[in-house]
Image 1 (cartoon, rainbow, N blue to C red):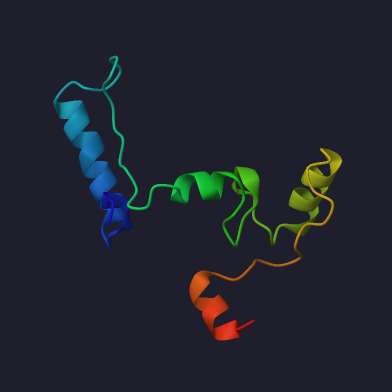
Image 2: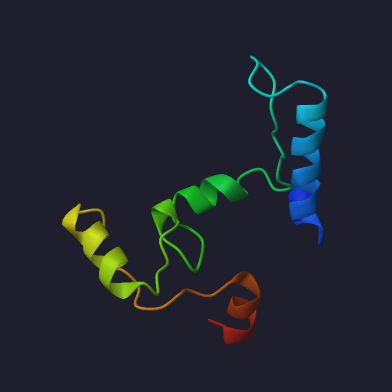
Length: 96
């Protein structure tokens, strides 16, 4: 698992940022913080709108007016779900 996936994941990232600042690795080429996630494509999947509660750009699916209108105006979607989709554990219980 990546450092972000622990119960103290937020604190882990903050600690990395503090360490980078203490070592002078912020604002220089090749420096900075890169807290890797445990599963390689989690971030990419979320960026593309595969998260059950949000669309691309992390707009909430439940934000009907703004989200739905914004994506439909751009021609990016024809039909946006009216409510959040199921997460994996919910899919297992829901069945086929």
